Length: 575
Image 1 (cartoon, rainbow, N blue to C red):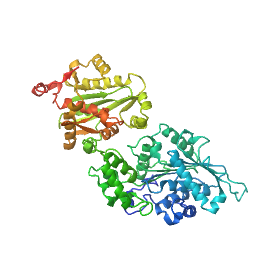
Image 2 (image 1 turned 45 degrees about the vertical axis):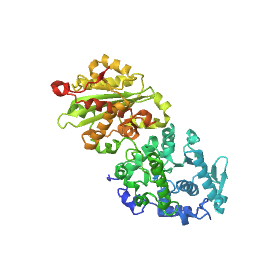
Image 3 (image 1 turned 30 degrees about the vertical axis):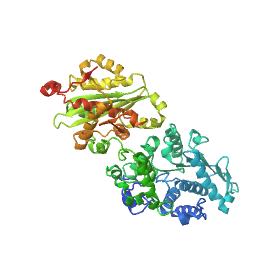
């Protein structure tokens, strides 16, 4: 078997830098490819003065997508390119391209009574796309004769008689907004999804798109095209899954049963995550702007960029995600906690709880949690017996009620459950029981100091305190860690140890999300990180880590060789 799939494009960044489409050479039917391109070139752009043809205004990257979509059909009718995932910034004719592909699919279809759909994330986007398709048809005498346009149902029907049978093929393309009814009436023969990142924020997105894909995979002639920009929030749900899969195919990491062709206009991850943010240089922007010189220019983007800077870091992050496909997250610090700038560099990939228990001479534990619709966070911080580096691992629990009340992050929480140490609880006491079991595991390993080993926010933890004491954790081991400005030392200390490399963590997605969510607020001479400041994005496991750091900063001695250093440690409050 080849080391890479047919869709892998390891030199994608080099291609982008020289203005080429970031796809590999494809084995396409030249006749079908050129017919599709001819149909594309003849389409009118209805919303540009003078209504020019696509041949006069479209860039070659759009034709490459059209060739791949319609030129990969083999002699058996099956498509090798069954899916296309295109990540492209705003103002690069996404919606117009979606409209074009829908009309080309109808024109090249030879199967009676098929159904296709073009799906916008909102009714407004769907209306815009339908307006484009309607305008293209009305501007072309041949298309006007061939297609019936139903403006009420937003449906385009092929009514032209088939040359062989004399009967219309009656193929339909419906333009609709994204909702559970998208799959009503059966699985479409072709589907074009515009702005998947917005769809992914709906709680039913994974289910609906799963139904579309599940049915289409069984049809070798089916075609799924996804055209989207980056998300205005950290990628989540089905958008995150599709984007990561597309990157895996592009990079050659996914090779089996590949039907997807990724076409990703983005900067390399290292460049995006670089704390110097080199992507801010307009000289780099052309690489991710395939329609440069047509619908968009760097000169028009620069004033918008400076306006975003003046508005604030949040607006700059949003602007860059939409116009440069800069992924919001750790590489986009958004004026947040300064420790985020050094978080990625502190990753030790093999570091998990087993590794910490094997290497540590002593551990402290932090706990933080809110109400039933919040996360319960746990942090285990070990001090390496040889190097004295601090080693961090975290976990969290959440109840189903949180997914109902906080729908904006529900898909993200499900992602974290699949890939990391987040548990969505199925019983009322599962979170506390599992948390206590982890604390007991550290105690049984002989790594908890006799005094001040488990630090908790003193509010709302009565059930945890009772459970720990029933499990045999001595009362002196539990410590009350004051929050707010009194936690400033732990926050600053964590920043310093991340900066100088003396704190390592395993790069858990859970913590990457929390660190990316953390925002700071000045409070007198202190800087605080709180849930109120950080908004809807959860930070409970990070707050738990600060509690553990606070206790480790008191220099606890290993239980078996407690000495003067342990006696001189500053006192902590005990529950």
